[in-house]
Amino acid sequence: MPSIVKDFESRAEAFIGTGRLLHTGAPVLVALSGGADSVALLALLTRLGYDCRAAHCNFHLRGEESMRDMRHCQAVCEALDVDLYVRDFDVAARRASNPGESVEMACRELRYAWFADLLDREGAQAVAVGHHREDRAETFMLNLMRGAGIAGLTSMRARNGSVVRPLLIFSREEIEQYIATLGLDYVTDSSNASDAHRRNRLRNNIFPALEDAFPGATDSLLRSMGHLESARAIFMEAIEGKRQKYFSGNSICLADLARTESVASTVLYEFLRPLRFTYTQILDMLASCDASGATFRSTDGAVVAELSRGILELVDSSRLNLDQRDSYPVNLLHDIIEPVHISVSRHAIGEFQPEGLGPDVAYLDAAALLGDARWELRHYRRGDRIVPFGAHKSKLVSDLFAGAHYSASQKRSAWILTRNGEIMWLPGLRNSAHFALGPDSRHYIRLQLLEIPN
Image (tube, rainbow, N blue to C red):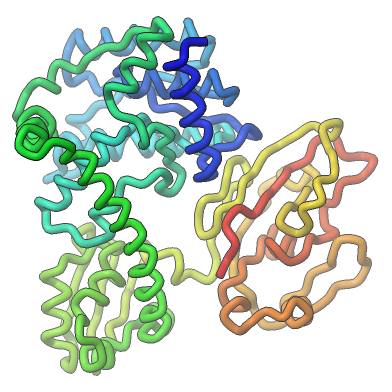
């Protein structure tokens, strides 16, 4: 094996493992455009032993070139022996039904909606995309020019929900060397040469000028982003503490927040930014915090914030941050990413071997998935009971919490997996006796808690 290939794949394997981006127990959906990055990603993951399924979006925006890209993706998948799914999209129709939406945003919305459907259909664990280090630097600069805060400046991470970026540590040059050594070809989007788009202007003009004036500028920028990401973790922890202080259900004690916090606008913006309220709206809310009757609507119209006697109530809260929800529907056909990270895989019973990982892992007879079962992750409710594995009688979950010396904070943040309301697993604490493996089991579902709740 050429040293370029060996080094590239060793670094990628270490990056994937350290970040727990992927596992081999479920398929991976790979977004394939036909460009160098996505071709390299598909080849890499296939060579590392992952069960890959490729997905190509044809937006028909570049005439014959769009068809050329699709044909190239078909050829690549045939060479790598990977199944390819192709979807044709009508971008004009999408924009007609969503006035004001840009072409780029329309394509993104169409693409990721389809990916979400494929994740369920294929039982895939994640969508892998081919973003690399220069993409990351460009995104940082674009968000900086928009006046983004710390969350926006660190938005391109190795994992964002169900999207993973295994190539984020590699440069464009390294990626092209890797696929050239493998003898693979790629196509180039002719629109990349145009400066009509802001990202292209950055890529074609700004970054080369920066590197010319300040050699190593991109490397320095990426190091700064790493420092920001560390700071972001501390920042978000502080915001979460303030969320617990000022939130009560779907209401915010706005008057108290305005009087107490020296940077009230920043705190409130972090509360409401995921719900698509603007910074200007945040300032207006704080300016009228002692008034009543003021109403604010999020930019997508999904949330209405009503102000009454210093209390800001969020109504029609379909976009509320998941942390504010008591329960969250989950799908055991693929990995659970939010509100806590749990890997999910299905196996034949002949593969079963006890692993000694305790309650961080649960095994369920796959029969639990039959029928129209409703699966949820939710927080503890007074009176909750579970039949522990190996027992015949139920126990109070509160007693199990006490026995494990859970703090009040741990009790509040603990998640409970239920099936049609019945407790199936206390992740990290206790397995249930329901749907335990037995002599009649043919297949089983393996669940592993990867992110320990605080």
